[in-house]
Image (cartoon, rainbow, N blue to C red; front, side, top):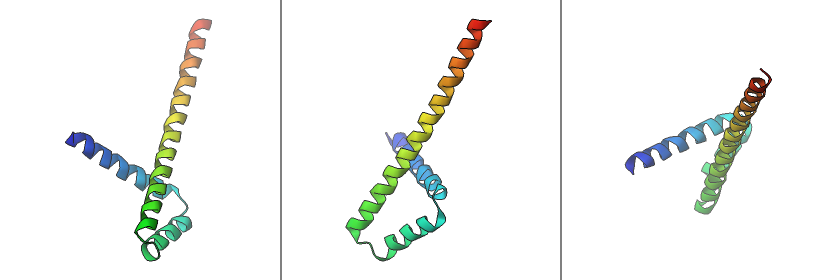
Length: 84
């Protein structure tokens, strides 16, 4: 159970970090500045939840694209084997 928790925390940190680097710097700086200066606790919670949701959506999109690519490669390979 502890290992699972550690893996989940590590995965979250990696996704959040990679997602932040993928965003435009100006947009990210604007969000961070507002987050640190003008947000109350409800606002911070909402921003944090939106960032997590966005990071997970981007991760799942990347996984789906990779799976689609691999399935297409398998189909090509099977069709090539049938023609041989």
